[in-house]
Length: 511
Image (cartoon, rainbow, N blue to C red):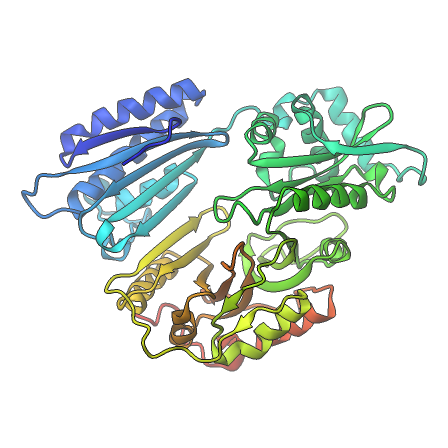
């Protein structure tokens, strides 16, 4: 196995006594990266529990073999990956640990898995069929945020700027260009002035992350700069591992006193021009639905609605908008294809073919629709399924990378595990270029998944997204959509929601 230069590979015997060796390597790397002692201790405990799970659940008693641990330093934190070719790890076989239980903590089953999720920020499980499985842990490196750097005087100025009326149009001349590394602190201060600490992308509050992500090309930041070198606004392309050629538009804001000057329009125009020249396949964006304002701006820039992800995050406060604190946030996915494939071919499920046709028409795309699936297409014996867990927003994403004969069984197990653990929303991603998506979609809907829309992707990798609400009832009247087509899409999604059709089987009834 070839390992990139920035990663460290450690191959370990499947013996518990080697846990300390793995911990020492992670400890040294975390120390070099600048983690605080308390965070390093959490990482060490997460490593211990992860290896215990692998050794105790992946191999037959007495079997002597090895597994790999790969450490990857990342701009925003550390990635620790475990790979083995033992039994597939099934989290549903380990009971949920109840922290309120009065039983002996040292003997409590499920404690290890519970601890891992408390100790790191993200956990991903990937079953690879005959190629084994992967478990990936990620923990943020929380260096100084802007709230630790900003002075009292600057804080007072930021608060005063929020209360000021916007300057008259033309009062400030500006230019738009890519952010310079030394401007990261000014960008973070601008974000703080605009949103306080409520902005959804936490990275923007950590200047060192913003700077390093731009240097390494994981973030492409554009700024509007006044004639006296003041940062007036910021917008960025977020390059995601999910699909590096179809980045997300994000971290978009303008200092309140400069709003109305056209900063956002000019930054967006420059960003799209560069993205087209750099041969990005397209750009997508997420617009919140608590209010339609962000959607309105994004729609104006040529982005069109492709999906609505219901209950996708925790509720947030927005300036001037008072709302139910218990209501979760939903988002609209909007996309602009810059270099669409001329040979795009998809296999939509017949139940949703009409709305999918409308989505692509709204995008000005004409993929080749295959209404029928060849009877000669067969699945492999084992599926390849990826499960991503977002503990911050209490959601999970199941991605079917490759269909196997066990796909329904594996998806059902993952769903049951996730809803038992009280994840609010579970999304299911299916490749539209795979003929088996058309066959299996209706089977997944029998599990109470329902239509969400299309997640855009590069080079014919668009995904059909289904969503499952874990006993959360959406108030569709409060899901505010800006565009006419977006409202049509919302009504279609509402018509498919088992809660509105009174066909919902109830919480975790798929056992």
